[in-house]
Amino acid sequence: MRYVHYCEPCDARSPERADSHEAAADRDDHRLRAHHGLAPRDYIAEIPGPLAIAGRALVAVLATAARAGARHLAASDAVRQVRASAYWQQAVRLLAIGTGVLVLGAVIVHKML
Ligand SMILES: [Zn+2]
Image (cartoon, rainbow, N blue to C red; front, side, top):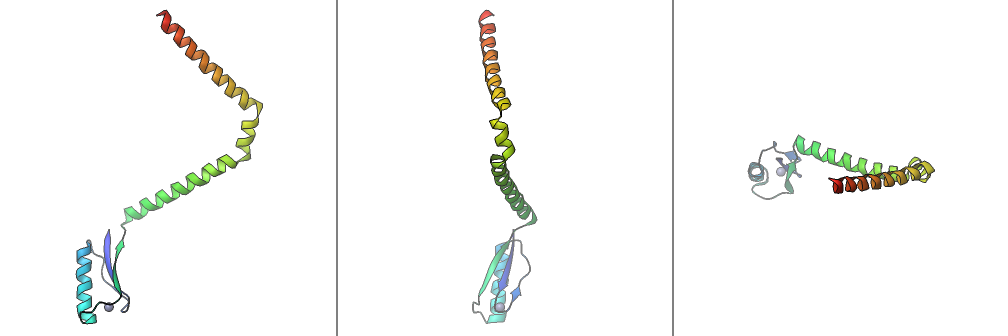
């Protein structure tokens, strides 16, 4: 994070500083020199570093893609047609029967040993 002092009446901007205390020192110095110690409309802004900017952008892109992808998948006609088809229903039934047979076989083998 970097810090910058802005003075709106002067349209002035201090150099970027590594900590807020240095930016506050810039502000105090500017107030003393340009405004005779008075406080103009000014502020110290935080400037995010390149890693923070890239991280926020990545999170925003992933969140948008996840939302759009889930909505698109649920609403797509292809998925609805596959689910409604006899092949899909038969495959689900066979999977359930196959799982049941495997569990039964495992129980029988376990009892025999
Ligand atoms: Zn000023």
